[in-house]
Length: 79
Image (tube, rainbow, N blue to C red; front, side, top):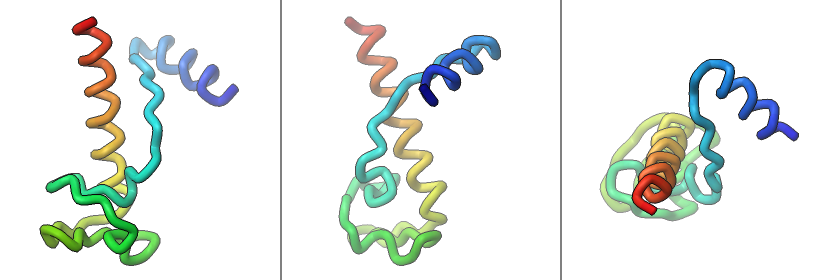
C-alpha cells in the first residue's frame, strides 16, 4: 500500500519510483563496498572497518540505495 501511494506521488511529480531491497544498505560502505555489522558504530555513525570512510549512517545508506536503484533502472533499460 505504501509503495502504491508513493508510486502515485512520484508519477504525479514526473518522477520514477524504483523499489530497492534495503538489506545491508546501512552496513555496506558507500566508498569501498565492505559490508560488516561493525561498520555501524552507533545509530547515527558509520565508520568502515576496511577503508576508514566515516559519515552519517543515513547518508551512507541513502547513497547505497540510490546506487542500487540506478543499477536496477540501467538493467531494465538494457533488457
